[in-house]
Structures are given as C-alpha cells and as structure tokens.
Length: 309
Image (cartoon, rainbow, N blue to C red; front, side, top):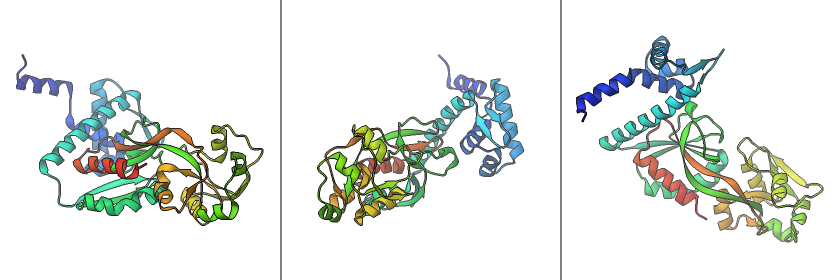
C-alpha cells in the first residue's frame, strides 16, 4: 500500500510542472501566448518556455504554430479538457471553503434575443432569489468560442456537444407562427398552412446559430408553397418580433423565447402545427471556470424561470 509521501512523489514524477500546466491552460483558453502572458503577469517568453518544456516532457506538440495564430493539436485538446476541468474543480473548492465575497458578480453570455425576451423580464425574480448577485450580461453569438470570452455561463442553442465548455440541458424548443391580436382581428384566422404562406410574413435573417427560417419551417411541416409573401425582412430576430407585436404580419415564434409575450397576450399562436426542433438550449460552463454555488443556482434559475412551459 502506497503512503501519502509515495503518492505525492508519483504525482510529481508524472506531472513535471504545475506552473507549466497553468500557463498551458491560459494559452489554450485564450488562444494567444501574448494574451496569456498578460493575464498571468509574466513575459511571453516565459510562457513559451513553459509550454515548450511541457511539450518536451510529453514528447508531443500541443499547439500548431500558424502564421498569426495558434491551434491546439489533438493531444493538446485532450490535455486542455482535463486540465481545465481540474482547475475548475479546484477553483470551486476554494470558493466553497472561503465562502465567497459579500457581492458576487456573474457574467452571463447570451444572444440579444435570449436576454431581451427571457432574461431581462425575469430579473426582479432573480434579484429576490439572489440579492447578493451582481449580474453582468454580455451579448454572444451561440457559436462564439468561450475560450476567448470572459463569461461564467453561456447560453447556447445546439446539440450540446462543444469542445470549449461543459453543457447542461436547459430546455427543448418548438417553433410556430405568431402574430398580434390586432393583426388577427384585421385579417382573420388562416384556414390552412397555405393561407399562412400567402399572408404577410416577417422574416429575420438566417444566422450561424442554427435557427430555421420560413422556408425551412414549411419544409419541416410538409408544405411546399409556390412562393412566400414577405412583407418585411429584418436582420435581428428582436426586430422581427417587435414588428409582429405592432401588427405588421406573421413571424416565426420560438416558444421558449416568446413564452412571456404569449402568456401576456401580446402575441397569439396562429396554428396548432409546430416544429419540434432536434437542437435545444444549453447552459455552458467554459473550461477553466469554477462551478460555484452561485453558478449552479443561476443555471437552475435559467432552467426553471426561463424554461417555464
């Protein structure tokens, strides 16, 4: 049976330098030797030496050195995932033991639509639940690399399988046409999906986030109209929904985002037909970030308040 001292010697033999691992994690997370050096308060040359030492000790390259960028190799990616998760656990333990500070700041990264429709309306409830929380909202695309963004939690829509963080399911999603009560009163209820295709449609630009547009929605429900009647096209989904509220036409409604507007009657659902998408919303903790009690509580809040059906 190994003694504690023998076990410690074993760790030191297998792990040549904890400093090198810390500096490697910073470079991998930030994607830059220079930025990592600034964060760590050391020189770029010192960081480069530590990473080179780690590569020599392991006998593999951890980064591809490109012309003006670096990229993790497959071995580097495997090491980064383990190191980042381990550092996250250590940071979480420190936070639990120390009890945290009196005021706790949390940086939440979401798209503009998610924060506008789902987070901001629920802030009073969050404040009652977490009076010490200092929330900072930052706008991110769902595809933003979390290693290059200073966030504690990111909300993403997709498969839940990402290399830059650990994801937790928030809720699934379905999509259906919505309009304002005033538009419905003025134009009457469509009798078929083909009638909806002929009505005044509001479109928002397709993005890299995986959201469907009107053409994809009709394909998913098995309808192939000869043409779609677009009354308005918007770059932002928030603008498309605002236009629908003002009675400009019919927009595609993402149920989880528009729950409060539907419940309040500012928007109405036009048909029972909907598309239940295969992707879902996830809370993602970037590798290297601690899962603190306040972080876990925030994820529960997102899942409960924002996920209300």
